[in-house]
Length: 443
Ligand code: UGA
Image (cartoon, rainbow, N blue to C red; front, side):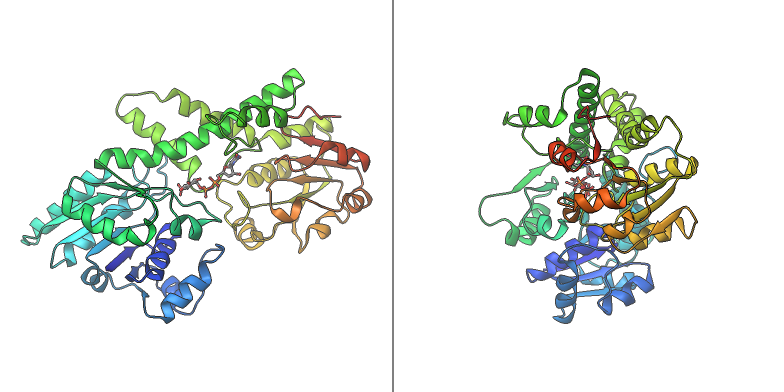
């Protein structure tokens, strides 16, 4: 099938590459000429396992192309995805200007029936606004053409995006049009082979499903972080509690890992956006407001432990920091807990000596050169002349470190672990002091 994707961001690029891989003919349109040129030369703008070979092989095979030519893009696709960004406004609600601009562009150039598919995470009611924008633009141009607007939210995770897209848990299709449903079922049939993963519903429910999914996951995390804080107050160990409750299949083991807060481009933005949307319809989303405020506080947790341990006397110290990205297998620093920690430490005159397997360039780009940030090439180099160690991201390569070396290099034998990676018994055998989240291990 002929498919066009507007917006070569995370969602758009992965979706385009995966659709091309199964044989669809895909054209990606973006306003950023440099991004388009880079993609044609095999330079992928994001770090995502498996994406580079997928994009380059499909580009070389002629199944996916990249362009800034919106007119050509609209002419190409009978199905047109809108996958542009919806950045938060000053008040936290999703800004739809890019989505609506694409809707207008599609209407301006279309000469035949089009199925317009919202892939971006957009507030409930956006499909209606896209519908109105297309209709109004067509009318202004005296064109009498038919079109469908479908909501088809994406559920991929950074770091596992290609796999999530290739093997989706579910394919949500929000439409009341039988013909649009039929086309989308055909589009996704290669991903829907063993059992039917397609769930068809009305458009507004599809739009809300996306927010409800992310908000539920964020709620699980904030709930566990609250339990971790309580475990500390009560002298319990949250890791035992986690195993204890996860064994109940109604609760499950996934997304109940306590830590130094959730980050990324989705959870913080989507929780905030749903709170704002709720306000706009006169509803106070109390659970979500708590989810958000617990997360803010959780991101300051490591700093609190450090400050408490040293009675506030931390100026002039050097911290070895392992992990900068908001989670492993990505270079994404958006809303990363490491940023909150570093900024609080810098405010107290502490130097950060950091290592991350992928996010060093991004950190450099965000913070530039500053005397209190040293980015080093290995996790061992981060320990050189450092006073103590902090772990912020659970990269695999941090899971079984050389504790002997850590003890030898640090001036104070002390680890603050924001992801509960280590066994406290093993650590204490090495003579290291250890703080983890909700484990009551403060010394
Ligand atoms: C999230 C959702 O998991 C995807 O299903 C969704 O499609 C995506 O948002 C989106 O809306 O585009 P992502 O932001 O890539 O995906 O990252 P997650 O793996 O969900 O992790 C989010 C944050 O939660 C990370 O900071 C992670 O460290 C934290 N987390 C996760 C915890 O603190 N505890 C857990 O148990 C799980």
